[in-house]
Amino acid sequence: MTTLDKSEITRLAELLEAAELQARDVTKITDDYPGMDWSDAYAIQDELRRLKESRGHRIVGLKAGLTSFAKMKQMGVTSPVFGFVADYMARPDGGEIVTSELIHPKVEAEICIVTKAPLKGPGCHVAAVMAATDFVIPAVEVIDSRYRDFKFDLKSVIADNTSASRFVIGGRMRELAALDLRTLGVVLEKNGEVVSMAAGAAVLGQPLAAVAMLANHLGERGQEIPAGTFIMTGGVTEAIAVEAGDSVAVRFQDLGTVSMRFV
Ligand code: OOG
Ligand code: MG
Image 1 (cartoon, rainbow, N blue to C red):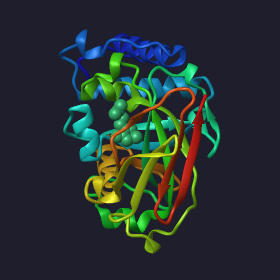
Image 2 (cartoon, helix red, strand yellow):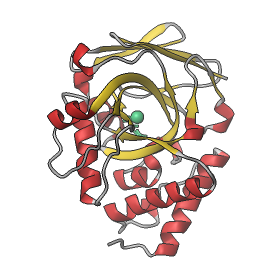
Image 3 (cartoon, rainbow, N blue to C red):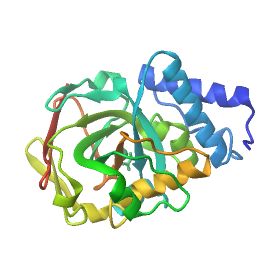
């Protein structure tokens, strides 16, 4: 049950989508709706998804966010959030990202998987995720909160589809059995300088735990993760602000490098 009515949910989804498409920030929606709850927040995100699908966009992946201690500390929150990525957000490895389309972009390094079997909560755990993992692939997510100064609370950021904006899949795919995701090192470079490093364990002790949480979150709502789903497990380091002129390369141990230029 939501506390907001259907017309308010639609209005807020339209407001957030307009902010995204026009690259204009807005104040966080909990300022106007302090009583909104978790189901309102996800209902607004679901409406945002419907708006995109109704315009012919396809949802091409799911994401967990705020799954590492570095990110939770950076954003001042204490629990993960879940969202989606759409086809128009994808950019090629080594390609350009146009900053005039964005408000205040930041990059984050993400360990991702593609599933080969459905995952359904409640009760989904890391071993079930292992059994359902087809392969591991690295990505860089460009997040761009629609909220002024990137300041939000959890409900506002969920409604804003967890700041999803652009993503670049790159490097090379590997079988899960060939990797130790916990010790997998990640080095994030901006303009040739190392700006952040971490290992996979930064994400909930084991990045696959983020996928189990996502399956359990969807399970509560009667949904599952279908086979063949691309899933981003959340930034391993804090997010790094970028602007036009910056180039970013993220080196993932055993998974290659993902790079892009901001123009
Ligand atoms: C929320 C999105 C977080 C991640 O990987 O932690 C996210 C934000 O920090 O704006 O995508
Ligand atoms: Mg992310």
